[in-house]
Image 1 (spheres, one colour):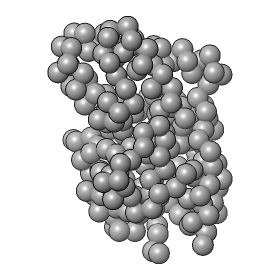
Image 2 (cartoon, helix red, strand yellow):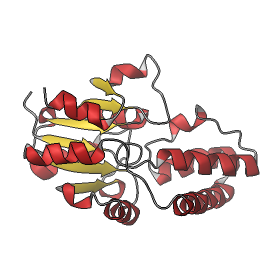
Image 3 (cartoon, helix red, strand yellow):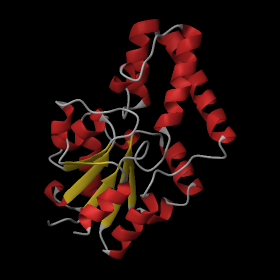
Image 4 (cartoon, rainbow, N blue to C red):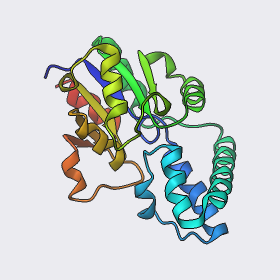
Length: 216
């Protein structure tokens, strides 16, 4: 394979943050009687804050949506603090070391805000592995639009066909496919349906498996 660039999603791929986000969502859901389930969270996983706010506003109105999202963020930060900080997903460092060894380009493309993403990547010790980071505020349209992944390719002047995306969300996998980039899916808290599995070029249980595949 003519591979030059690997693009990582951040939440749920590099960081064990989706599990924490789910706990926070379920807590605010219980308080405000939103009736959220893992299944209903599918439509927001991988999306921008603006997109999530829009979806929530349709259900409860803009003012309450803003209040709920603020409380959710605070709960999420409390959980992370109580757990001793955000944790890395299995195989992250091993895969990043392999990419470095093979002299491949490496990027993060995340819907998370610039300040928050940089802070979390630095705190977990993986920030310096990446050649570039692309944030949701750098592109006009967030996932599932292809903009963020195409932007990553443009930064290196690399053809999308020479890249791979690693994603855990349906929105992210859809964005990769729309960008014409092969997508490695490493499922996290949300499992893909049979139809959604078609978005995956290949599926893996963790990033160690991705490393083994690339090393074949």
